[in-house]
Image 1 (cartoon, protein in one colour):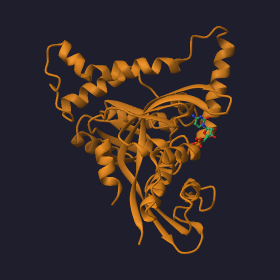
Image 2 (cartoon, rainbow, N blue to C red; image 1 turned 120 degrees about the vertical axis):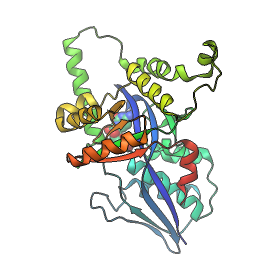
Image 3 (cartoon, protein in one colour; image 1 turned 135 degrees about the vertical axis):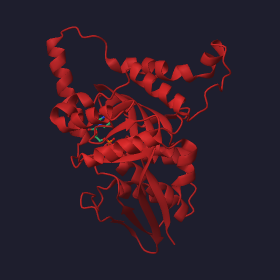
Length: 332
Ligand code: C5P
């Protein structure tokens, strides 16, 4: 017997980086959104001992440094379980692509192992193990639209956005997140030299930008305007269009673009192409190298992806995945 899971990718809808903390991590603010692109993770528990990772993608480490290994080890310890664990990863998502693929694989490993061994880990145990192994893991214990604080591991379920069509553009470039954070530190140090009394950090402006973005769709806004609270059906083209326009207007951006684009101008160019192709909002995901563009209709997204593929970009049309769909689709 084995347990297979869809291990979904995420994108970041805005990402603000704060100062480097005493523990070496950076304080950040972001909105994570799960999307319908995935790897498949299959976990098998057998008699014996040890953890084995199987994956044909050469960039995926097969030993103890793989975070699926780390999660499996911690789950076995927490549950005081014994056995040999075989983790098979069918890779479709890019490695070091900024879509949280490795983190998602690790959470899928935890959930599959829990089912495979019929373990009863508490939600607290799962969150602790996930946060312990990496900042981007806990979001995959929630799915849908998720607010990320702290070093990214402090997660809160937001009211889900309606499913939004998107085009994801992947690149063979792998951007190492620690290196991108280091370049961010250099940029901040240079700016501090140029401006001796700098304006307060922009991290604090993220919450007001998110509030500006999402508050027009809060029930009290439409009630104040004399409309029925459910006046705009979720998922309609109008609602998507308003959300995307408001997202741009609110100035929600990914700080990593400021250090990743100068280093990889081809990624900036791909963002420009997404915008030219009609994306209502386009951005780098995480520290890259993946870019995405949100569209108001699935047809538009498909046509844009097709044109971009013809022009040589690795573009795929997909959609965002709400929390409910995430949990419906997780176990195959
Ligand atoms: O948490 P995770 O293991 O994914 O982080 C990888 C590296 O990225 C950290 O060791 C750190 O260098 C950097 N990082 C950071 N601030 C964060 C998240 C990650 O500096 N909020």
